[in-house]
Length: 361
Image 1 (cartoon, rainbow, N blue to C red):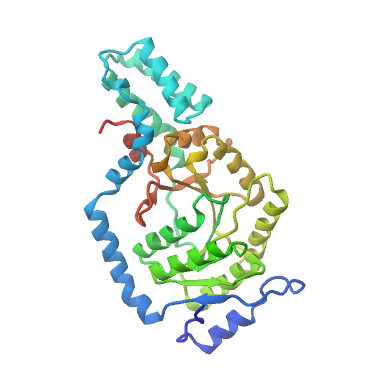
Image 2 (cartoon, one colour):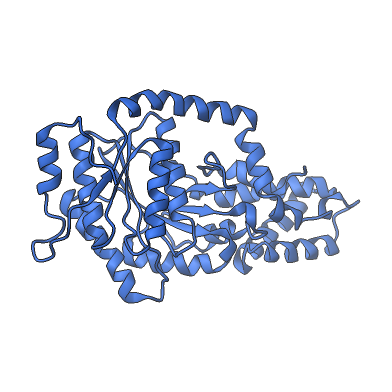
């Protein structure tokens, strides 16, 4: 491990090192930092933004999104290439939506609205049906679209949660690059102290993005996050991304441990965490609803990231999430992931998603 930034002031060092990791009764070893020199961070920020822009020019996000949703879209097959709209087409469409994990409620909602549109607008061709379905899905998903605003707090503390394998650590690395492209400075907190591989992976993302990583080999994950926020304050960092260990919703004692991290964060900043992101693997389909309910109860989830949409034919689960959200303001779907590339995690936009899902190649 490298030491903290050598060029920061002595007062900043003291602030980070002398801050209690957690409550006095639970002292923990001070976290270590993996950092790049300040000059390197400044010099590489422009290079990072230029690299992102160059990559995105090669293949636009809409094309990557469409490619990423190919498996889900393929379920539609030749439904919209038929000669006319009939009962058989609507029945097959119902089956297709269910297979794509739109869910029973979501499928009924879309089909009822679609049949009403067919009658009112006198739709005759499957192409018209396809356009109407795209519009209806966009309307259904629109409440989930809410871009994340980072300027209200500094540092803006984002806590990420989810089960093992959902893609939390990878999402953190991609978010770091995304925020850098917006001109924000970022610090990572390796709060998954239970898995050495997770810590090493986050350190690798830090090196790749030229950002500091606060980590320790073992101990209380809350201590790592606590020290990371103090370090961010001392250095004037804009965004803190805090990783946490994977939890199954049924592991109540472990869910309590992750809730403790949130409470400890609030000891540093009573307004934090400013965003609690739940990372969901699209491959789990309808199980995403149960995970959202459990993590929301434990942490108060404020936003979602749905990953691995490129590896599943169940991309319709986003419609199920929109339909099954509790009454009132739904939990925002902040980002979706459609590939392994660092630029393949982007803010969710309802119209783009619906178009990529239903429109022909």
